[in-house]
Image 1: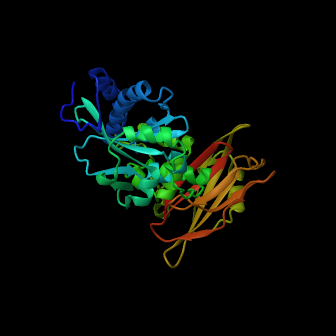
Image 2 (image 1 turned 90 degrees about the vertical axis):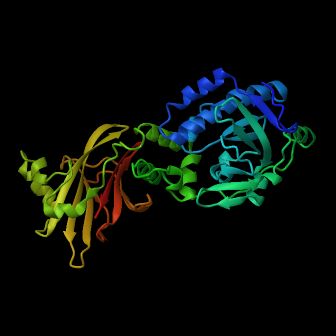
Image 3 (image 1 turned 180 degrees about the vertical axis):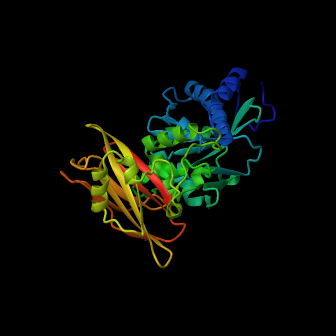
Length: 396
């Protein structure tokens, strides 16, 4: 195939039917339509541009093909590494090339930053690809316009370098060219907070995960490869995101009408054959006629083996309409102790740790400070130890 209409400074490459078919097949395992398009376009780039680049300019050029599937479900782009430099390809199927738009993740996540950013147009039928310009991270960050609604940096086409040959010449003449500008590190988030954020993103009500969280938290999740992989597996585990099996929040207001979610039991039901144990738990938690109390057994998979503990919630209605909540954790055997270092935590709706307590050696119970919630307030309770974590969401 020839491109008689192509400007001589632009790179046009034919995409073989085999590459088209293979890229399409690889894209079909992704859940969202956006993820399928990202995969299709980026696979075409890898299979077409990388061999050309290795043959013409950089035999050492490589792509980490294992890293990108966990990105493509939510973010478009492929990085090619040449020695110490990173080339980022952003493919698009649109015929509009007035500006070059790059997802914020590739600009503001420190370990995602590239040196050169290549604008790629892929024919909608996948028959050819065209690199119509390139720029640097420094140019995009300092001269690009930021769009908060889409979280993209955009650069006008007139500010792009159209001739890709310039890039190879610059690399030879100025190997230490300044291509990146300094960016602020993302604030650290704990494993506990990340776990809660991942559960939030699993909700079927979330249709665009990359815009659901403040960018600092979203970027911190993607910066860690293990959290990014968890998110990818979580999205792929859903069926088109409409039929997720994510459990609904426990509605505490219904507890006062004796309506309880599955798994939350009365002490008497749990210790039906051992009434003395139920009495001991009631005594330990300071029972009152105005209170509603339920317990839930949790099977901890610790490094030392499996062990069951009891998560107990005690509710007390307040005159002002709020509800006072007391959260406690017990070993299921009242003659035993909690596993040392098990953590009981209260998390906000955004995943931040509001308060937490950790069991010491020979603690037979731990509890959070009592707190009050207005109607409709959302929060989560988490029990964590070693690599195990259990989180339950509530609405008061």
